Image 1 (tube, rainbow, N blue to C red):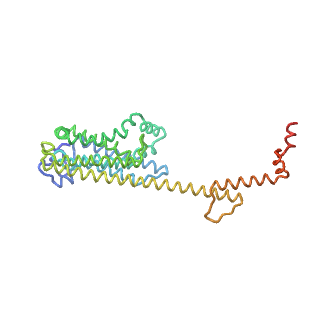
Image 2: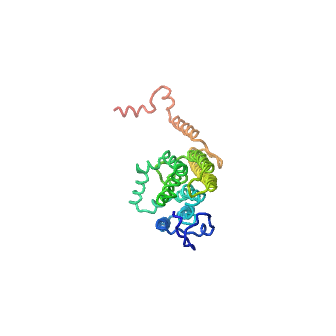
Image 3: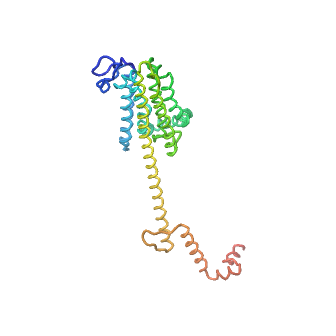
Length: 352
């Protein structure tokens, strides 16, 4: 973002020396790429609303929670790149860090919680549904979303950007700076989609693996923030040393907070899955108990309400009744004792 970008109620860019509250809260970026980004964000919201409207017309419901999560993600995306916050991303390292935390750790999980792929699949025609699923399960998507690759891309992007010359280079080259925003958003979505999202995907992580992945990455976020806060020189020529140290402290505090909140979401999702599985198992047990009670009634066993017999006990009773029925045939036990067939006359007739 250019420092000279326009904003609401102000004709000039944000000052480099100090952060003004009215610019930060009411600023609106009006550069060409900023307007394109605004149009794309509105298009995302319109497409999401259209998909939800189609489901409602078909008599189906869509959870309001998913809609709210997606809308919040798009709103925070605009705050990161189109509001007054973006006016200071080249002059204030601290606000630059806030911007990148939003782009990588806040916006992507909210978009993933909105389940946009699921909505698009359910709202589309049959032909388009097949196309979407083909893309999701394609070889290219499988490669881009491979868990190990995405994990290293996510945390590697943080270190490469802040601990190498990429940060000061982006400050001096606005187009590269804007490209890093898009890259951070993309990598963040690829990282958070299998962790908190419920959309169809090529790779499905178990919940213990998701939790372990987040715990494994949290020290890397903390070490990066501490490394920035202890730099002996400013992170870029336009930033002061105090601003650099403040950016490091801000990074590790915000990153720990964002990852911790997402970790809580994963734990809640895991508990929800366990509750659903328990309910299904209880229902299966109830159905099996009802069938066993009905079978016991057929065998002449009358049970008190709420009691049942295990299947192996019912098999024993059924076998015992079958043996009794066979022993009630006249002469059957005598012939069986002599090793003769139960119906020799029938056997001789069959031979003739």
